[in-house]
Amino acid sequence: MQAANVTVTAVVNSPLQRMYETTKKDLSAYQTARANGIQPEGTTVEKVREAEAATRRLGRPYDANTMPPANMIVNKNAARFVNASDK
Image (tube, rainbow, N blue to C red):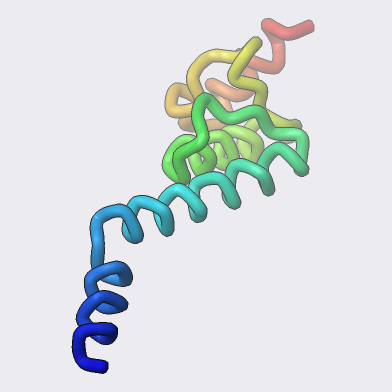
């Protein structure tokens, strides 16, 4: 019985388990962003959060395919420039 507990502990604390949990969080955040019409630059939580911040500043969904990098849209003036260049 103790051997079984060691195996379970080894699996729960393994690098693969941590990678799985991280990937699950990343993809969940990405899926939520896509459902809101946001196209982040990547699937990591960091990229999704940058795209969400850019969306708030722009006043419309951020699209990484047609707009400058989200981390460059840092204030309302930058957002105004992006909005003006899309028209």
